[in-house]
Length: 542
Image (cartoon, rainbow, N blue to C red):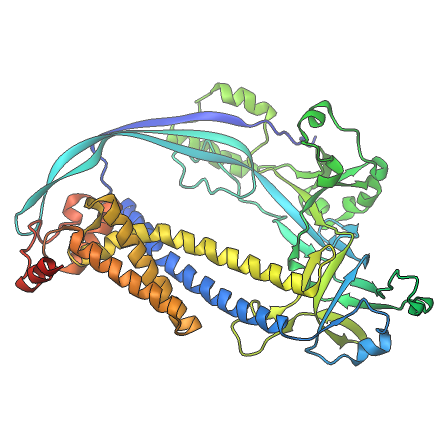
């Protein structure tokens, strides 16, 4: 008999380890920590470069579209003949309330009428390991290559505890590196991953914009209607339209709200958040590939489709053997009893959500495809990548072409600002690394100097990118000069570190962040070299 879908989470307590002495990392753990730190230092600037290029391309593309003539499809003098005569590359804009679309999932034999976009949201029953560590702070003396020493603080006498929670996750968790992988095994099956489907045959009708002025004699002429298909690639982003979950209920009628939802819905009706469809839409699901091959069935409880995990005999025996080796075979806990009402690791469920606006505004070019007029993205040639240099917009609601372009520019600007904010956080750590390369300990300096150094690095890096992408301007040069000046001030005001080779100092700092043992990050010297005469003169004159 097939199991039902359980939703109660369960928890188990894992093992506890007590480590006496320093919590330094060596071997494979140390290598992984160093690689992780290096990735944190290298990836953000690369992301910033990609973001600034994208912002530059998007700004040029949107500016070109704002300065271009746009043909409105919602006017009386537009008919099918006129539509066919519009040359490719000419921007067209229109608003439609007559949307003929159907988005479907062929793996489940489900089709949702009126949906521009259909999203399958998959969840997995998985064990999650939670590691907590409680350490004391100790002091020790470390020695450099020249015999000089300094005192540093480090973590010691750590107590590490592992706990496990099983429940529904939006992602899979690999249990291979768990402390107890046998007792908390996560099968990695994924027959129905999260996927987004778009309507492949979306047809829009644009009605002529007839004025309501009774004195306008042109109202006596009937308005015209033109139709065009919508390129599926334009449906990857439908702005201003939230996702609505799909629930299948008898006759598709909205169920009465529960007592809880009446008090805590904050005035928002459930029909705004959920789309209810009749159960008749599921008549073909028993013969779908997902149902036949992986036993997916509709179980309701909010629109879920469920597939129980069935472990083979060989897999069970291997798992028992792994539990025996790790000592958890007879480790029975209260969570195991509660787990009888919980899902089984390896179970899979998913639900659907849609974007189904009643009115949309589109902006793109129109061209003939197989004898049918289709609205497709217009690509600005010779500028950046195709994604950022294309104008193929779909916004929910009625919006003018100018408003759509300004909204896209706002989205692009906000996205670039978020990446810049992340880079500023990165600059706090990176400035300390640059500081040791120049013989300065930014982290041991005052808070004002630390902020000064971080702003200096951020300003120089962003200013250089702006100079290479946007060209010379007073703002760009101001950013760079301000950054260089702040860097000069922080260099002269920060704590001076020991002398030695710069690359040894940089490696020592990275290794210290990775918590490597002192013998693996030995510096050349902890004795600060005296200031040169010319440096003293500059400081006195300043």
